[in-house]
Image (cartoon, rainbow, N blue to C red; front, side, top):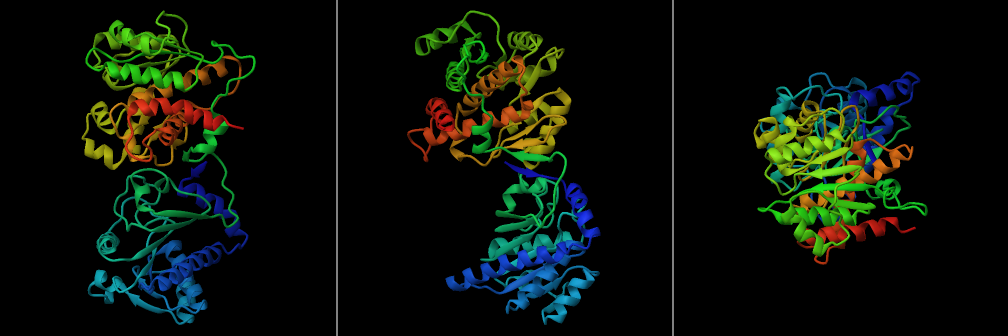
Length: 490
């Protein structure tokens, strides 16, 4: 599991070490220089430009860059420094100058893009995790120009802490795209969450002896967490202790959504699936899945809305599910009914794609795509719900819990029916956790449970016959059981 902490939490963790005189900046600079020197060797071996430019701003991030330049000179290399701040880190500047590093002032450079384009490697130390708020001029203009040049030239960018401009803000977009980011103590949210995480390249975390305390701001759940956390069937279990899930999905217009969600729910391992939706859809499900029960009865989690267009029946069914005091997954058509639902007891889990999230909040899709974390938070607060925002990256938000994401999955998951499969897996997973909670066991937060379900859904791609190529949602539903079986292997 990868974790991300706010820059404030990282600075708080650093403070005792700095007070004791631990040379954190020197340790960081050494790690930066060692990685930069390795890149120099790789590029020289490939016969490409390996000249190093260190882009230096103010504060400690600029200090890291200056000390890294000093270390590179000590390695026998000849880095060049571009100072982009009137008051750079004094000790680092003196050390770099003392080592014979050539230093240029931004004010003396007529065309910064052409100047920077002469170098094959950039160390981006313009603005690190100390940045508060959006970039201001002249730094914003400088980064904009360098970002454009970086896309034109064959430049390797090694970002220090984070690509300048990101800091804690996952929604920040003005930054120099990095090939690699080297950061210290822990990731910050922008290094883990979209869309900023698309700008960071590979990430290296150097601990430097810093111990983080408290809950992280964000977590990424992967295959290890799926294996460790997914409820396993036990010797004394019976179908009611394995979890019972109710599904109201599909319609005359979209009957396939009901079949896909139900098939996926079965594959995810609950003790029973009750189909409680339209009779016409049930007539299609039973011949294909005779183990599905259509009689009403006790359930421990529910899915409603996949393949429907909302309306009074769905609104009433959603309210009925919530009144049972169980986790309820509202997908597709049910999302149009959430404001009408009685929220007296049950836990509501919303599963919008980014267009649906924009509709829920009455804003533009482009705005949501530019900052999905922000808008998922808004929806979670407005509807008192857990929000599973589906996009190129999955973002799961629950009040007072770390934001949850999973590693990037196959882009072929963006296919009709994939969301119905996810909804079924999610409801079945929640039912199994709910059964454990009823037995007195401690279970993780709903957002964590949803992350485990999302990781199972992503893992199923590898078990589709056409993988790693384009996949069908029906194959994905069948792959759920195979992925879960592979996960449960001792």
